[in-house]
Image (cartoon, rainbow, N blue to C red; front, top):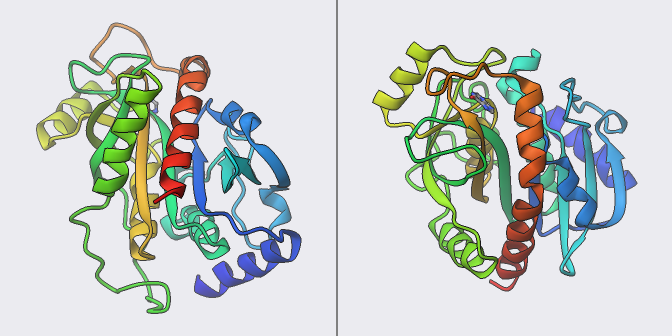
Length: 272
Ligand code: HPA
């Protein structure tokens, strides 16, 4: 796996002469945020050797290198999921790749189902901690040049970045909530019984992507900020049936406010 990461890194580095400071992953339906960046390089996933490619609709799959508020960033438009048939190790390869390209902090966004009562469609929940029901992406031989065999997870979502996000949200007039994200494997949505289990376990919102990405970033010593956009109430908590199309449509509706928050955050984080 580590050789594959290095191969992908060399392949991307040969195309891109750019050192991003902050990496941003855009979740389902949030791809339009990339349109607000002053793009310098755009590289489709399939042009990077050894890179798993995204197969989900609404995840177009490319790295966009450029500037937000004059800060050098890389934006992943579309991500790779465990449920697409990739291993957890493969699913986090793009995260490792962005870190190898130079990023010091990551903003991971996703669409999620709201479990806690006050989390409604259209809300943004900053992730304070996570529960992963997916095998760890660190399973297998460890390369100590990447990180420790047994990384500490007591503050997986950096408290400094969280405080910054609270300030940034206030500045742009956005009321953000906070809570625990739980990752199921997907691709099926959860059953009502599974959602009740998740709630009993202490989860506030449910998704299919971010926890394993955070684990890979923490392994490499990189700070993470997680932002869940609540695209629906989790299964069983409303009388609506869930669909990916609805998730995407709701996400698109929130792109503007999330974009503003990210722009403000990037500026603040780069000054730290
Ligand atoms: N469950 C899991 N993943 C999701 C959901 C959900 O309800 N909504 C958006 N992504």
